[in-house]
Amino acid sequence: MPWLYITWIPGLLISLFLSWFALLALFAVKRRPPYFPAPPQTRFAVVIAARNEEQVIGNLVASLLKQDYPHELFDVFVVPNNCTDRTAQAALEAGAYILPPTAPVLSKGDALGQVLPSLCQKPYHYDAFCFFDADNVVDSHFLAEMNRAFCAGARVAKGRNEAKNPYDSWVSGCYATYFGLINLFYNRARANVGLSAKLVGTGMAVSRQCLEDLGGWNTQTITEDADLAAQCAAAGEQVFWVPNAVTYDEEPNSFRLSLTQRCRWTSGIMQVAGIRLASLLKGKKEHFWLRFDAVMNLLAPFLQALSPLLSVFSLLLHACLIPTLLPSAVLAGLTGLALSYLGGMVGALTVTCLCGRKVRRMWKGIIGFPIFLASWMGINVYSLFRKTTVWKEIHHCRNLSAEELPCLRNTG
Image (tube, rainbow, N blue to C red; front, side, top):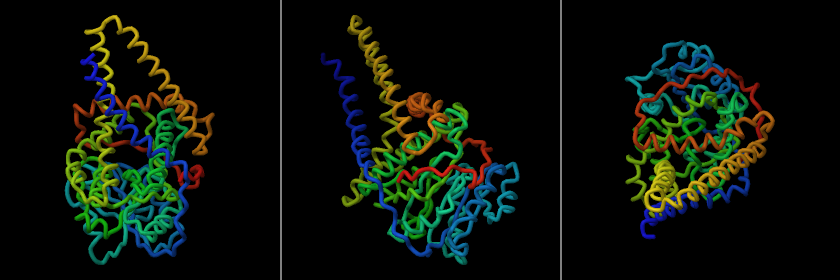
């Protein structure tokens, strides 16, 4: 019937959209060779924006000062902002330099935008900037691996994110599985075909020359990482994947807190789409695939929000126009949900094994992973109608040193 095209055509578009990501994921089968050894030569400024992170900032600074990289080639700077605790004192006592913001700070991007110009001036002479969140702990080889990538031609690079606390709760376990999926089927796959890794805002590095070519740090949204990634794609800058540069990130244990965090991520990406899509669509032809992939990523939350809305609309159409078919439509929908849930569990189990985690300690996260993924559709719908414009503090308290963290399998 002609009215069915109302739902079939958008459904076909969503299927074509998903096929792009599925096709690229196939290239994850090949493991990336490591970057060739290179002598230490890149001078890094390590920059950490921190808000009320007194409990965890010390371990991050300590892990950075234990890098197997010449200490004369890097400095650690902490940018305390909107703090009501001893974040600055704790960072200073751990051995970091303190760079206070010069104006009110509404987001992490604001803090970085205020201090980076001073680090680009004399007497500083850094070649690249590394960025971390205050709750991170960094593997001792991080800077050495980033140096290898920059010596191999990278101007923007992303290390591998792992959960600091994968066994704390089913929610933190879901985050660990999610990052495992990203590392394996997004970052590794794209690296194999010359596309960009996902530029998450921690454990990443940008060359000074690249920042200058981009006109400085000028992110305009609450998701500075997605904003910078779009700017890089528009300029034809590939984000290099550096899987042996590992950062451990503290994940939320509360599902409510997880919803708050992911609403910020999704709303920020939607904001970036509104600002950067035009420049991505009219870039140079030789950078087409970098820009195309960036466009697909920015459109993802919109199309993911469309999917559940389309399902509800389809059921309403059946109820109004062909009520006799409604029971079979509902049954088909429930069957699809059951199969999707089972598939999500199998996927989570597979990623858990591939990442070398203990299945018996991750079972709650494996069972809950389909719920974690499904909740993202609700987040996308919510963010479509209500923007998140204020960055809300995420309290971190999982105080682990680098020595206490697991040695996880290389998923590069």
